[in-house]
Length: 330
Image (cartoon, rainbow, N blue to C red):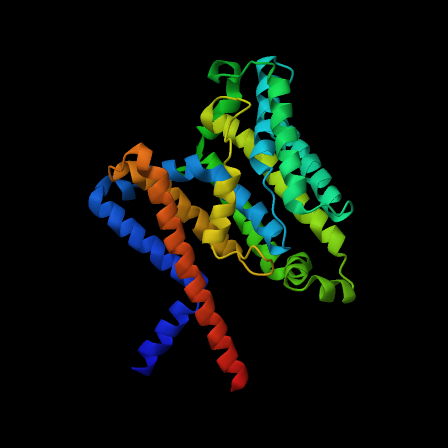
């Protein structure tokens, strides 16, 4: 009996365990309604179509951990994606690796500028990133010049998202590699510990010798870099480049983190949580049409499910807090 209580306590006291249970329940319920959902092809297609959100959720994790927010990520994606598309369309650059490097470099610069404005200009993150959201999306339209790049303009670049290694799509491998790197950095390096320290208590972190401004610039630069990478990935995945691509998807990126238990007040969250949160969001998006919910009602149902998961997360966090307090009393 005590062992059962101990197991239950561990489950209810872990955000990741709670999310995993939600994930399993969702998969069982959806498979019961649509057996094709749990096939290998269905799962890999779902991951491929949602890979950009899942990757950007990692960057948002870092930003949220220091108590910030970035609502310009989808605009950076659109901006870099449009540059990649136009470079291919007019055959200025045709090398796939070089196009990815260009996209990453542009995203890095965009993120660094955002970080500098917030850290050294002391502009509130929501205000700064709102401004950059309009700036980068506007630049995407300027670069497009009322044109767009279609599949026939993208040459071999679109083939990257079609290629596979060991049965998995290239873009899924990119996601896996990035998640492994982030997990190692956030779990076992000084940089990861500094990010958590700044988010947990900024003043204490500064007193201990951590440059909080540099950490702020770092997390926004990483966010921009991943957004730039995702801009190139999106062009390859969808075989087109348009200035409005993934418009307003920054809300999905933030929602993935929140579902994953990342605190918007900073200092709390994990790579595993961000992954599970973005995976739950991807499953919801894939499942709603499969179970026969009409498109007009999908956003409402999606919102209800997200709220239910977040409430479960809050309850799990409270259970963790109570358990920690009892441990200190002992």
